[in-house]
Image (cartoon, rainbow, N blue to C red; front, top):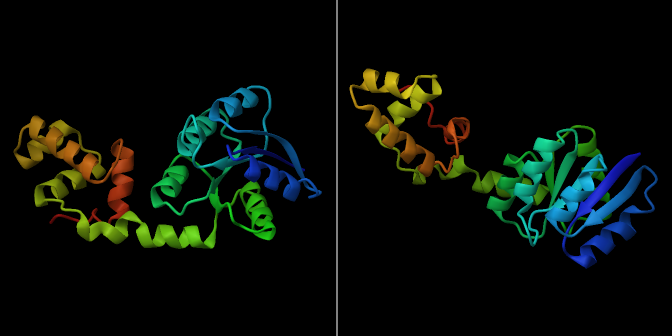
Amino acid sequence: MIRLYVVDDHPLILEGLKSLLCPVEDIKLSGDARTGKSCLHYLMNHKPDVILLDTTLPDISGAELCAIIKRRYPRITVLGLSYWKEYSDIAAMLESGANGCLRKNADKEEILHAIHEVYEGHTYLSPELEQLLKDEAPHSRAQHLHITKREKEVLWLIANGHTNHEIAEKLFISTDTVDSHRRNLLGKLNARNTAMLIKRAIDNKLLVSTN
């Protein structure tokens, strides 16, 4: 039995999902919420198997709520629900740990398939969302990124585990200059930390030898 919890601020969506899923034998609707705050309060005492989570909520973004849920309750599976085909929303949900994303206009067969897929440990994306990610993925826009030769050198050394001091010595520049290049790279690749920077660089096919 899959214990399912739904978080969505649209009453019609909630009621529609309830009427659609209640008759399903191996799924038990354990509750629903319309805000992130209500969801987190519920999770303090209950642990569903799968959460259907709207990408946009009135008090917090779906991605932010997903990140909190995955940090506090890593065993809970999150399946995003999106009304709009927005690359940033879908990408943010996946980066926050969501196990997949589903369009709200999906039919019953697809919704059930998605729930079972993520429950079993797989990732599920609606076909149109998967195509959206392929079309709009950062690497498909790599040509629009202007990364200087020096920034590429710094990026390569960062990816190979060198500290700012070591990079400065290898490139015969100051640590302040290295810091500046690092900040520029984080900004250009829209990364919050070094790990994300390296991932985005790989996605953009930027990590190639500078020799």
